[in-house]
Image: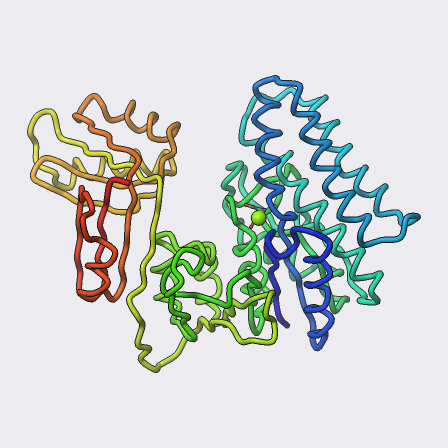
Length: 418
Ligand code: ASP
Ligand code: MG
């Protein structure tokens, strides 16, 4: 059993859908679950719908219709005129319109998830129908029937036990060779749609792989695999053939966008290989991420995390940054679900680097301003270099305005002003 995941970039247009169809049909050996995200940049476009809708701007309706048009246009190039795909697409987008018309909730996250999920529902419908048309038997499985989450909308947590149960007992999964399903979305036990965080389809792939003890998860990307730096920005980026789970976890944690950071753990836990390879050159092997005893020599790996914020907390009573103060500060980050990217302690000051999430940051400031003097710096970038050497350090950090630096034997991290 293998899991495939295709991201939005692989299915921007009809050509893209034809291409992944070819990849699937060339690999029809064995059972496959194929996880698909929304077409192209549909999720971003749907975010505009959400924002207009919550701010009561009627333009949201035009945006929905533009997105529907895009899906109809792609379908027109894939199916004969009398195909019922058109009705299916209309029905999917009608659902969103009626949700918007009848919704009375003011909960942003809830509204976001009910609307945003339509991207995946529409893309998988098109892909599944097109595969059928091309003679590839498959079933479309609604991920919301099997991916159970809590109700932390926009960033829902998987309920592993319930999800495992639902997946293991799902007849469609048991009885079919090829299954198409949505990445990124799930549902609460009350059947409300949830999402797993932007770019979360990779994680969906890993959930299936883990629960079904898959032999492998393959993530099909627009690049050949994992590189030591972003190949879209550096022509000299070095391709990495093999990688350990540990290295992949480190680099995605620090911001490498090639795979979603949550993807590795479910695979590592079951010793499942991850291959990152290109849908543009499917005949080439990609990067294999797996357990191995051999020592892998890595080139320096450079990861950028942009739009970072440095928050510094100094105790007002000059108490040291000891366990009690640390506990209070970290608790507030935990309560507000704001992930800390880097942390540094001084005598009475704790410095923390986080992604720029204004609402969460304001909530934390409110909670902590009574006891701490809080300083704030934004528009920063966190550069992490794993396995650094003098040459790389000099190339990437020369003449940079450095606000914070941390060095271990393996990892150099520098916070700079952009
Ligand atoms: N379509 C979603 C997003 O763009 C999920 C994904 O692509 O993984 O964030
Ligand atoms: Mg996407």
